[in-house]
Image (cartoon, rainbow over all chains, first blue to last red; front, side, top):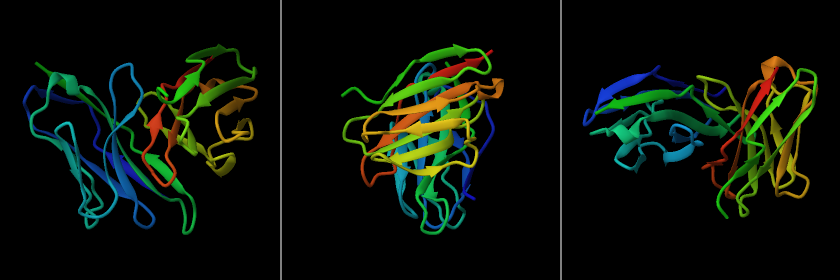
Length: 116
Length: 113
């Protein structure tokens, strides 16, 4: 079946540090890939997405590149801010089986804590 | 339209009782999803509607769980004979036709005593 594996958190960084959160996946066919973010006390919201190999999704300074050869979609940001503190979820949307409906699959989430 | 809404936001019930949650998606969205999320985990897919048709249902969804979307707009998720293991956040999300990008509601937190 489809699955998403994220690095375990929490990830603790100082402000302006470089961020990488690793995400790898297993999926049927050609999935679409997503990063969602959940700020404290709020619902999940889409951060960025990529729908085919070598696509780069970007938003708010975050980037992730769809790497089919390594089945990865790592999240990066060059300089984090305190306001980036949140839980980040890697997700994919792929057919559960050949010809089946597209079922979303989420990783466990990685908590990011940024200190001033 | 201000986004996906869910009611109630919190529900405390005793084991064995039935509970029902409601989700109102963004009006133009024809797809609606239900998830369960427990502490330290990502959302776990439960079921999915396209318009009023329930197209997929997770094997994790026991017979005590049922979902409906009678007119292709709002949806309800009912849990019968609740168990303590049902305690979780229940999330609803919706998406535009042809898109896999989902918009999430704030969730309903269920506590079963």
